[in-house]
Length: 64
Length: 155
Image 1 (cartoon, rainbow over the protein chains, first blue to last red):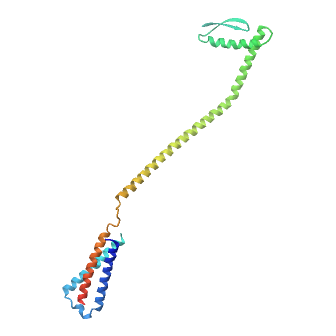
Image 2 (tube, each protein chain N blue to C red; image 1 turned 180 degrees about the vertical axis):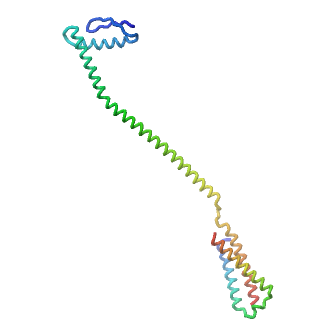
């Protein structure tokens, strides 16, 4: 993959994060507990996993 | 012993000498005869006396020359010894320089070999992990987009 492709992937990530941020900002306070506990837990695990994956990539990029 | 007939100042002489020295004796007698014949007038004894004096004078002069040449010979010998000493030192320096040059060449060869080894061993594309990073970035993009979709559905 060329540098442009990497930039495109980063652009996709930024746009997805903006969508999440926007959805969470527009979300009614009552809806916070509407999600089933299992699904909410899975969502948290996925968010944690993605953040961990991003941290790993950033660390690798920093250390060459 | 050998018998030799000599003629000096017109008079013949029978003399003896060691075998093999006849020619030298004849040659010396010729010198004496020449000196004696060079003296004009006078008796034969006087001619021989002057011949002997002239030969003694030449011998003395030759000895003086040899004596005066001795210091020069000493100087020459000292100069030769000094030159030989300097040549030996120069040879030593040359040997040392050659050894140093050989060592430097060996070091250069080793360095070149090391560089070549590093060049061969080094990855041609240093950014080898980049594709893996890019794949990971794509996967993260996919996962975050899925998360975004999920969060949007929740909202």
